[in-house]
Amino acid sequence: MAYAAAGVQAAGVLLAVYRVHVALRRMEERAAEETRRRAFTEYRRDHQRLVARATEDPTLLPVLDAYEDDLPPEFQRRHLYANELYQHALHGYHVGLLSLTELHGHLRYIFQSRSMRDYWEVTRHHRASLPEDSDEARLGRVVDALVADLDANDDAEDGESWWVVGTPPNE
Image (cartoon, rainbow, N blue to C red; front, side):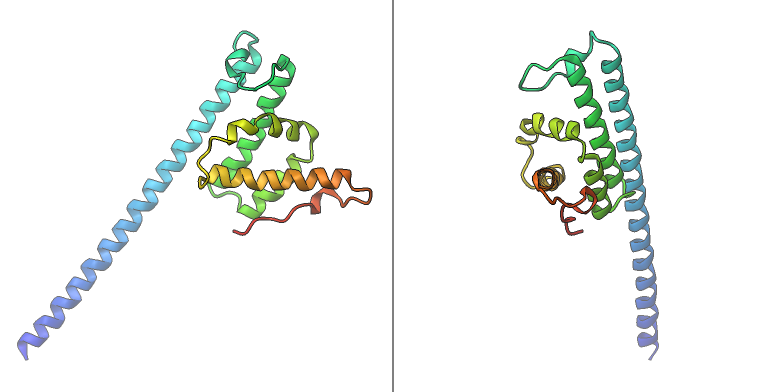
């Protein structure tokens, strides 16, 4: 009888230790995720500062010229700004401020602009090298479909309003 009671007590202690272990692991994972998000946010800020410097200083702008065609500086600045808008939306999604459906709605809004769609077209070759299964490639395909829908809506005689164009991706 005493052995059985001791066994039950030992099992209870082991279960409690296991629960503490699981709780600690979850806390470590949350802390690591928070550290990753903070680093990601700081990385985005650095990127924004670098792009801002290039758009303000004409001698630095050619460094960011990664387009296949020769574009005048005003188009390069416009495309860099368009990229910042796109990256801003993605950042909101990546840090959990926007759901995929909310991101789609935000992208639908910013890509109603012809300048945004022009930027998307001239940077197509940038996305071609992304790994097919990457998050960025998947989101790029979402934007490709959205841009196609917006273009079709522009061409339609009885086109719908832009805010109802496109099908949000599944979460």
